[in-house]
Length: 108
Image (tube, rainbow, N blue to C red; front, top):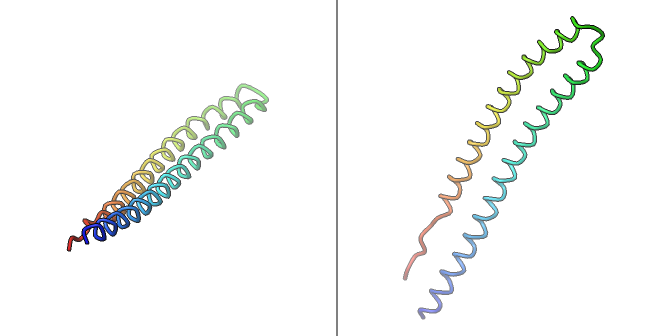
């Protein structure tokens, strides 16, 4: 009879481990998406600025582009800060969900 309880405990453990792994993968996928969104935003801003700088007809136009670059840098920092906060939220949600999965097996 002890083997039956042992098998049931092992089956429960395997189910919980699979659920925990799936939950962790979903959390990692969301974090990767947030990273990619931030990188895409940085890349779009940088390529637009570089294109404008290459097409600047004179020094005054180039100064205006460089001034806009300072503004874009601030926006980039804001985007990075927002992404970091979102990533932290995902990590907390994932950890909370993983904690909820931890259940001690009942012994008969």
